[in-house]
Length: 358
Image 1: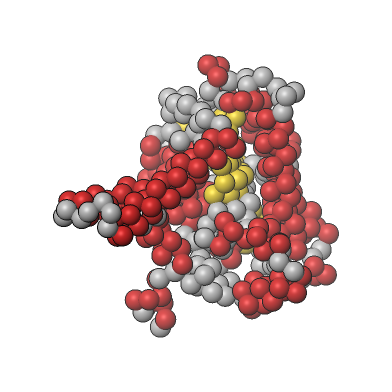
Image 2 (image 1 turned 90 degrees about the horizontal axis):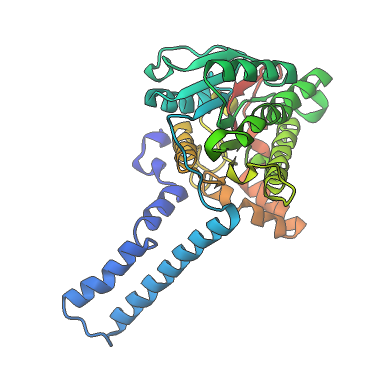
């Protein structure tokens, strides 16, 4: 089988990671001229001049990227795990469960909001608190937030991860399915932010908080058989941008400067949400392992930073597709197979998958 061949694990993302840790890394780039000088290469030698030029370009690009992040998102907030309380929606399975396990193994205060209770086979979930809650119901979220604050303290990290998929053509979707889709995939984010953000703004000692919005690259692309899902995910991207603008505005409430926001737009995840979908191009669009994405989210939350996380590599640059002429965009969609993937999965119209995102 192809997946057993050595080259089946080589993807453009793997190549990019290797390059970023070698010739595109400032430290490694400067090792080359240093090694040349160590063997007495003259300063005027072409290879020495070229290596210094390359190392300078890489260093300037790295510094520029750092300054760009600081200008866009400001300085990180101080994360104190003696006082942090993490809330994860959809934490009973998939990506949410992995993040709950990561924080649970640290002994952090973690609350899961989900309609199904997670199994406790993982040691990381032994100390995690579960609150049965339909996050699409504003009243249930408000009730859950009060109980969490009473049991664990005021939440400071909110990871909005809950999601569902129907995988049907638009005309096959029932009104009930449409309502459920938007309740879980979109409105739940409004409910949880309205419930937990006020406490973050009023947190003592200016600790602030972090809000993670788990959307999808499909919110930027759209896809056949996923009109309801992609519409909700596109709404999350717009909501996140608007929230950032409100927190940074002149009339923002006190404490808004201490709130950090993270937007997550992954491609296809290896979870039950799109388990039957075969990626059209495993090299250019590999399936993302939830552990890998969870690690990046946890790392940025721990650093107290705002920002965007997009995996795999193409998800970071997909916005550029919009500048192509309409005919080129259609050709790109046909080549990528994005509109054939869900249809080819053979998903039953009665099956609804629940997980983090995709």
